[in-house]
Length: 148
Image (cartoon, rainbow, N blue to C red):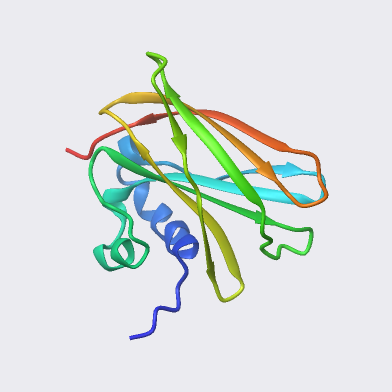
């Protein structure tokens, strides 16, 4: 059966179900940079359907989260960008986020895995280079949980 729902669309669909589990709710967020919107979300990989995880070679585990980023232009059309990032816990242990571009039909998004301990806070730094634009920076902190 042909997969017609993109991973980003699927991620947004599960957000409605997350409200029943506030300890694992990681809402999609967006930042405006000039004429561009950058959408980002961090989700536990255990929320991914096994078939979707296999399709994108994403290991699932309670100690792993998926960072999903997309960039839209003023017409709300996805565009390609260069995404780099890192995460640091409160002990100063850092990890580089390695993003892979995924293109499905008109959708373009970037995926990276983030390892974490239970109830661990992470400071996430994303640098987004949109062609012909100044570097866009997103900084946020998020607490990560293992599903019990």
